[in-house]
Amino acid sequence: MPIDLAILLQIVQTVSMAVLALIGVGAKSYLRKRAKNLATKQDVGEITAQIESIRTQYAKQSLVHKLSFEKEFDILSELWETWVDLRNAAQSLRPMFDRVDLQETDEERKQKRLQRFSESYNAFVGDDSSKDCILTPLEKMYHSPVG
Image (tube, rainbow, N blue to C red; front, side, top):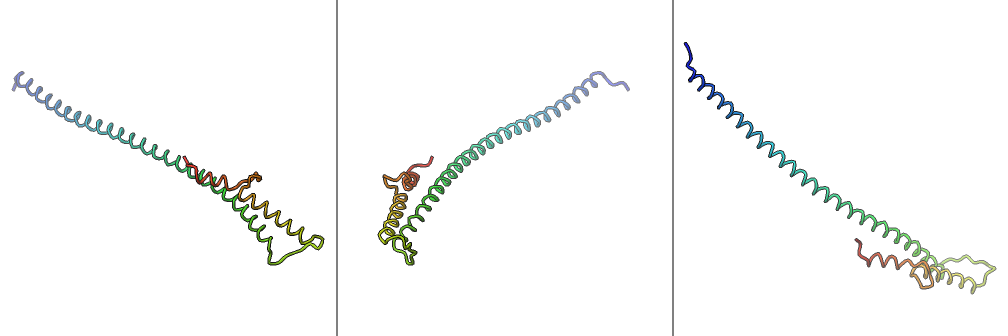
């Protein structure tokens, strides 16, 4: 049974069109998926850039706070030392129990103690004649903006 050439041509044409239709559907699906993946990659890139920006901003703020804390700690440590010296000098002005050097007069002992108190006080409040002014850096730190 011979097959007519026209029928054979029509069968080949139908099969070709079916194959092309399947390829077209597959290509369309593939292209959609590629476009979706590309959009996802771009979104991930934008999100990553935003996260890195926030991370950098947080690191800068953290560094500012750390430096501020360290400076405040140093100043307060130094202030504490001068305060303890001042307290001890003040307590020595009128001690509860006293050791006395028998070679020293009462007036000399009082003058020594008063001199020690005066030096400690000047170091604490930062008298103009004192070069170790402790309150000025502390006041500057609390009254200046931290940036």
